Length: 329
Ligand code: TXA
Ligand code: MG
Image (cartoon, rainbow, N blue to C red; front, top):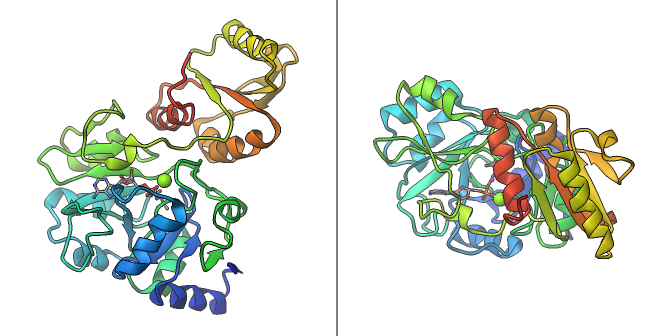
């Protein structure tokens, strides 16, 4: 039986105790809900992979609530890492550093590096503080599904599989943290997020590269897998051409589908079933995974359209392309 806990002193203490006892507890962060386990407990970490159905070669992020803990889980904190820690943490950024020996290799899927994140949401920080150990936390969804941004969506995927869910607010950002590899001379963004390469560049005062081809062979196993996918087929339009989108929609109807459009301005689509994807990048990200999980219940084909030239827009597009399994028109 999964317990549904509130942010009371008593429940927070229980959540922390459960984690220290080797149990799994889901909790909110400002990006998405995470599935927390004691990072120092090999068995607990192993059960995370089982609950999610996650391939064991995809490493987990270690969450900390103070800067001291970073020095415990990393064997070396470079000058660049110190700048990121001082300027962008706590925040929606994860840094990859050489791992220390206290982190079991099951956490890092055998890699000699460890991904570290200090979330900024008050709720996440309260939870981590009550755990009082470093906490591994992948997104709290079944592997390959859209990440959960409300506790109800965690319940959908994890009920009966984990000990507890801390029921907090809906996640503000809505897509996962920026993952930044700092183990080489040149910093490399492995996964784009709300913290932009420009912001990182500004802090480090040096060029930052970004992995653009998600199928490229890089040191971030997670990007290889099917991800963020709704249960129904999905297509993505990236040029906003209304006629083209309408034609695509109509051909689906002819084939017998019951499709829905996920677009910025539903009223432009001549009465076709359409839902607003969001007016700003912030709104689109905040609602994205929730929209996919909602629409898959009422329709059997999702046709999304999104274009944005901002850095954050590129991060959103990265998720959408993969939700649509590269079915882009
Ligand atoms: O916003 C977030 O980062 C959320 C919340 C819960 O903190 N967590 C999250 O975890 O998105 P997950 O497991 O869904 O994604 C972790 C990503 C994967 O792409 C994984 O491959 C990468 O981080 N990663 C983890 N450890 C790594 C390492 N040592 N080197 C390179 N990439 C790593
Ligand atoms: Mg995930």
